[in-house]
Length: 204
Image (cartoon, rainbow, N blue to C red):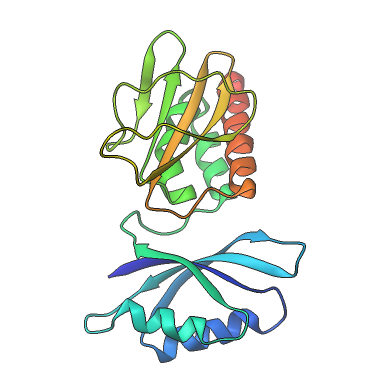
């Protein structure tokens, strides 16, 4: 069963190797690792995609990781979105069909950012493209820069939201249920990808 774990660890040589060894000794199998953020305080945040075999408890992997000096597991959850997609791979997908770049952006965001859904909302038309779990009645938001959003309604208090401007008439909104919180670096990446998708779409 696949799990996604976000872990904080010292940004020093050998740190990632020790983490991988601990995960392996606890019975987990690493499928992919992506660096989410490097910090000025000498730590890094990494997303680790794990395959956890039947009979192995995720808690045992968590305990093995947190037993390492300086390591803190920020979040761990089941992960059914597939493999991790790096931003450059997403850009390659967008440039493959420039005329459909804005729709393709929305399709790629759940895997690229590990969110539950994504949607593009037009000022006049409302939701014009969305992934399966997205609500159909999202409001248009005046966003000058990528930011965390407060969109939770009754029954959806556990979701975290972020959005970014695509152009003057449309924005992208993403949602992540149960965490982790959107980092400043993730907001910057989201804004960058939205800007690239808009440019690619115009060029096509």
